[in-house]
Length: 208
Image 1 (cartoon, rainbow, N blue to C red):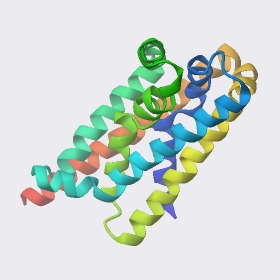
Image 2 (image 1 turned 120 degrees about the horizontal axis):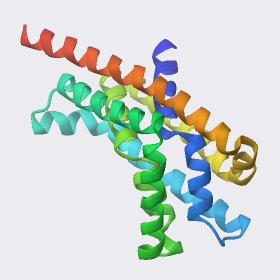
Image 3 (image 1 turned 90 degrees about the horizontal axis):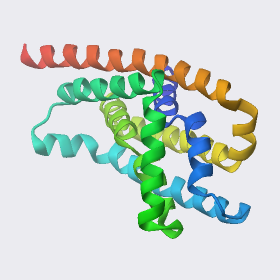
């Protein structure tokens, strides 16, 4: 149970539902409520598929490339720490907004569910890194199935936030979003440091 709570906390912080709400509104501007619902469903399903594949086969891909899980934990932890730094100092939001603006002009509204909503805004480098790291701590099949369940639950919550994005954005306001994003950033920073510590321990054990 502790491992599942840890996995859920890591994923939900990385997915950043409060930060996704205003971006989703920007990506789907001009759409009807039904069209927004279709984009949210499609983007969530695609993102879930991407993360589920990495949860099942991420470690094997690393093994094929000759990368130890300890090394990936360190690299992934550093990447997550960078994302946390951006969240705390409001750099991640502006970068995401630029990504969404580019995608709208290039791919138009029909492909917005795939890019940039599913990838890279939902299943981005941070979420993929977190998934592979969490999967490495759950080597057995039951653990992987439970992790996929946690991924589904986390993305399900994100989907609900996107469905009520207009109300959620008004409720939080500018100050509320800033506070929530910074709080999630601090939590993610602590989790990322733990990933690095676990990676160093794993590397030394393998070395010994």
